[in-house]
Length: 209
Figure 1 (cartoon, rainbow, N blue to C red):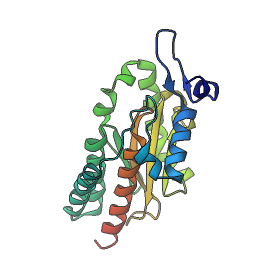
Figure 2 (figure 1 turned 90 degrees about the vertical axis):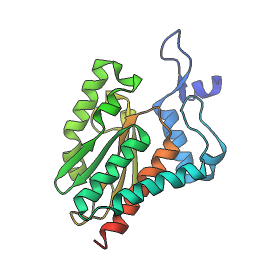
Figure 3 (figure 1 turned 45 degrees about the vertical axis):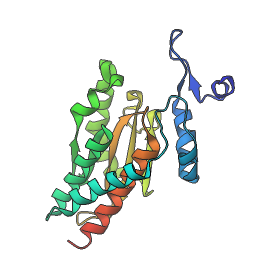
């Protein structure tokens, strides 16, 4: 623990609190599971809320996404359905670009989480959301899966949230995006897997609609 604190991976928010992961700690973990997926199966990060994968749970979650997307006859409904499924499966705010618009779902789910009892944080999240669509359009993150943790976010740096988005091709654009916005304390391995799968199933389905 002392070594993790020395490296800046965990910190004590105040004297009566325990140690919690910092943005740098979460980034280290995310990089590790991105480069070595097998690590997510074997290890957990202290205080991160990251549990070992349950293959049956993963399969069920993927099936929920697949059924919701494939049951739609219009591209925009399929994208909305995928977003709504991500909200249900993660408890985070779901987002996707549909043409020149940003579709959002689950704001109430996000703000009921304990991290957002602080009004300043809610305002910071609102600022991020207000500017997210134009930022996505201009920056067009190039990786298939993009993770912005806490202060890494280009806007709303003080909101202490993580943005996890997947790029996919759609009838609207070669660079459409779907993902979630949630507190930095979340199950990154599971959420990253869900967002990645949502992007993949949308790309596959919309290519034949």
